[in-house]
Length: 479
Length: 112
Image (tube, rainbow over all chains, first blue to last red; front, side):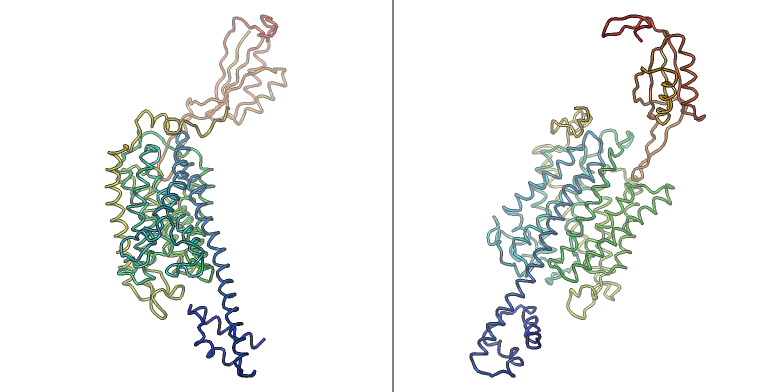
């Protein structure tokens, strides 16, 4: 047993350093175990073989565990779009538009998947350029069971590919909250296709891709800490949502005509599914199943809870009542804000980030929106744009080397660690995400407006998009 | 023959129905309606946006009765539907010219 222990220790070190066990290197670590036995070449040969076998087994075991968690995570992130977001948004619109908004989320599940297989994955994760990927993995060339050591060294690249796809699906789906109840389906499909290629792909590559100039783990020019996509997913979608809302204009009758949510029951179910799915989104972003994964899981949960309380409390103080819609909106805002921080902060900073985001986003969707009068129908900007921005900045404040020493052993990470310059890096990442989203979205909206048009006719809007765009109704309760 | 239309609070519907059954009234037509009289609506707040809901849900009962039953029916409704607050509703009574049972073409009070 003692012999096994020593060999295992040696093996772990070798596996962790990821060097192949060559014939020249093996005698040294194996020496203590062989010294008691006879030192004949046959025995050392046998030991070498045993070591090789053990190494393979250890690698296989780690890969199995990581791969299992990552496949579950991929499924969880898909669950966030459908049914999570579809239900959350579906409940918030009026009855006559429930299918149209759910259909947008569902259509994106199909559309982005196909784009991803053709060029999307490659544009996000191919090559090592500073701005965008290349066509190295177009048509998923070279994406198979072998890991891609640039990103996730222990899981098949196929798993990494499918996991990242789920992020690409939910990001444009978030924007539909701002364009709800008035955007054409044709315009939505075309806009989202272009938006994915022009805004999402470069942003994902810059932050997560090899050589990307915001990539913190691979020595980017402005290392922005973004564990699970606060900038890539939430700022880009939230800011684009604001641009869309401004470009499309208000819904007919807004704000005079009442437009209350048609079913908060659906929205609550949707928000709960988002919360659960977010574990895959954030904890899965560790790209492995280890201590950091657990830490991100816990931070995610605590951020959501504190934000639900923050929003509710703010509402209670201002309105004298805590609403169900407020509580679930707060939870989602907290999940957004904790997204970039999830793998960098412990539970207490997670509570702080969540609470601040809950109060801030409440102020954004109630006061700020009213001040400027734009019609962000379901508050995609107020929750994702605002929550993503505050979360990215707070990540720079609260990130702890004790949780994730991303800049190397012994090096400080966030502001409270004593490295306040990181807040500047975070600001840089935020500004670039805002910039790309603003410019890209304006240009694309203009283009799509010329090609298919963006807004439905007024009579279609009044009749409801379900009937006028899809020829169906969400509820045929008397049939 | 008289027709009684009673617009009542939805929460009082079951007890009104029971009170009418007790005095032997078995036929009625019930509709879910919305409306308002002097009762003000309420406000709902969704993410800071306030909506005033002034049309409130009510139940409308309609029944056509023989003249002899009308007073007792009105009493039963008054007793069972009253909460004493604004919004309890109204009763309207009108005269009916004719009633015809479709099944056997019977006419008059016998058709009721």
